[in-house]
Image (cartoon, rainbow, N blue to C red; front, top):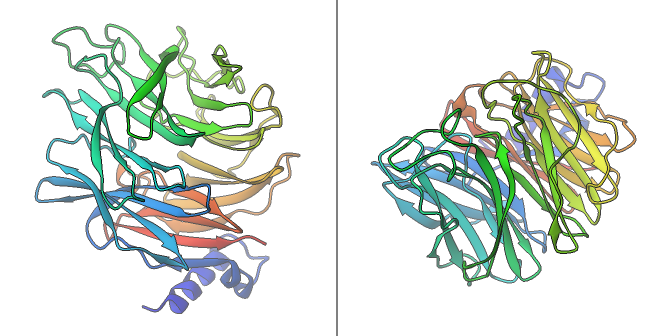
Length: 403
């Protein structure tokens, strides 16, 4: 099927489903399905853009019991030939805990996978791989954490930060005693949030415990403000309130955890729904899912002081949502948010003053675990989407031209 025909089909679908006030011609001009670089059974996509505007897509393929982490870059609407970062037959592959990739834009790259450390279901380590030649060749650089515990470690965020990399992750070293292989929920101790600086060669130079009690299996999100890195995550109080909190590195010291908004969502188990954040200078936006009244909602909040204070949250969804949010800042006053309502992947532009533009249906996936977490990134005047096509068991990508 040609790209032009695919684009037209998407235009008609969007016109019929979600934007009756816009013409099919208008939709055709801004959304285009891109040929996918993935040609086999794959899942767990991740998208990001480096400082030069280069867009990268990573994913996991599994063939004959072996897992492969691959990546491709986007140029002139074409994905490059996939490159294998790493492979193994003892990985922990999970629909919500996907590998990530980062680049400093100067030829150095870093990626991570989850490798089993024991026979327990939730005993695995975060293993790092680095490249110094734009991703042509990769080598393992060790384990991100050094506690040596047979426990759960994952939900990593990676980003490039002024000559080194920054990583945050959920660390289960306190959840399991010797011989234990528990998931952490209600076990010997609480899941903690940790962060570290990593050199270009993959060696850890600094490490911090940011919060000693957090939700066990929601994604972390890290982004770089003008003041320094911030980490946004789902917290967990002694009363099982699991609202989203932020910690910030200010003048070389980490602030105490602070809720971005008090949803007061009390839930006895992990909802597997982490926040996403993005920053431009000290303009910061955060999207997250909560269901304090058993009615799921996606909200977004903005900050113009690097996360010290936030605007009142704006609710994004109109119908029942399962969350799975993503967010990219478009400029210093607006952001694009994506989320899922049932099997539909939706997206909308939201402004810091509370104004919302009509949402659009990007694609259809699945609300089951196989649907995973749809991804977004921004490059120039375009937003790139990636998601799991559960029927074809592959990954699709599309480009949205901003007006």
